[in-house]
Image (tube, rainbow, N blue to C red; front, side, top):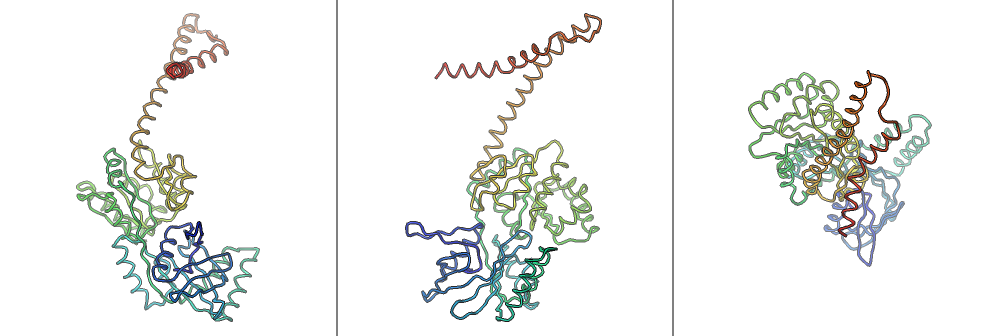
Length: 429
């Protein structure tokens, strides 16, 4: 927890703060300090930690594999400068980490992850692998050749790292609580009462997503959850969609679907699924990759009748989804500024979404409607006069007004009300 991360300690006025791209990593490093292992300093090539005996340990960073949404894991190879012991640490999501452990440990791992997920925690599997000096040198040569390859470089690098990520030793599972922001239940309830359908696209496990949906008020007490999890057979998915179609006729339903199932849906039965899913009370997509988020948002724009799609996100994984939506809204939070910078509107808390959509959005709609009527009225005046003139002069193709007069009329007629308001406010001031 103290070594396998990309956290950098920053000292300001004698106080230590951690900087990282993910708040989960900061939470794990803070927890490691509670256990007595402190991250003291970090550079590009070296990490110094203070162990439980209050003795500093220095580690040399031999290789670092950052976390990515495709890999769903991050790893680091470090060498103790005193003992020269080389250790490969790897942490990541259970869905990918279970295949890197010995088979006897997989059942135990999944049980522990399920227990933590039911409590609404985001799980992270921690593993390690001791490397002999010769074993590391042999791997380093393969990795260096892959990095310097002129063809299929990414594939060769992934293959070299994959050869190292085998027969890992299980260390434990960490559960990180994803705290809800204040007044989120009230905001979601008001959005639902306004007739807005809510889709939750998350990379968390299905059990975690279900718990968060209940605690956040996305699922009401009188609603039932219809699950479509880990289904790869298209025929079975088709039968499930038919069951869902019959189910929603009599009851209010919240659909829970995972990334494995949604990938098959997006390939073969997009129209059938979205035609049914748009009528459910809410949809929760768990284990959703960033590319799937963007694709689902794009398809919602196609299949949502008489509606606009707004995407709300707070992390880099939500950028594609935000850019695909009709309106992108980024939340400035601990996940960073990527979502806020890529969005049309930026807010600091989720509860501000209520005012943005239900108050400012309503006023914007009314003002746009009034302006459109104003423009239509301006055009009708010109059109009616031109029609009467043409009929009176035996339908000759002669304009009643020349170009400059038309341009001047349109400009003055449109800008006069605006300037009158400006003059009015200046007089008051």
